[in-house]
Length: 140
Image (tube, rainbow, N blue to C red; front, side):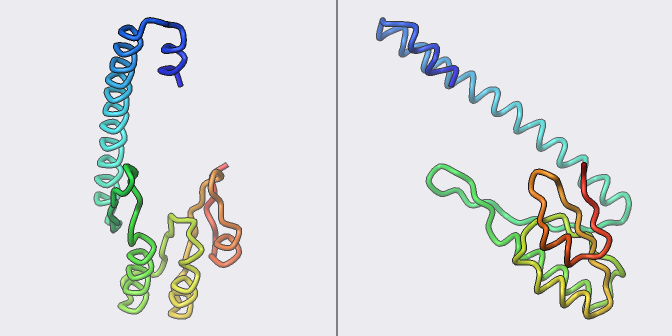
């Protein structure tokens, strides 16, 4: 938005071109800085989880039409939940996802006697998961 607002103030096509190019470069640099910060935070989280003996699994991103989309994440979560339940790897499964496609896996894990705790965030809360999981943990 700033880029187009700046462009509107100049009538000279050369100035407009320079501002567009500079704006894009500045945006890319800011985006790269944010990406590096987010990656560093993610790595700290993974280290903390490992330190406390918690396991996690990652999905993957697929780029299409210039945008990234997560792929296979819900299936990976469901498989991990079922393996943990059927192989008796844990007593409690903490689900950090608001995807209601996971309800069948939740039900199966519960049938195997596992407690499934939904960890939800207010910006994307799932009332279906709150209703179907024991002891939901919700941020304020």
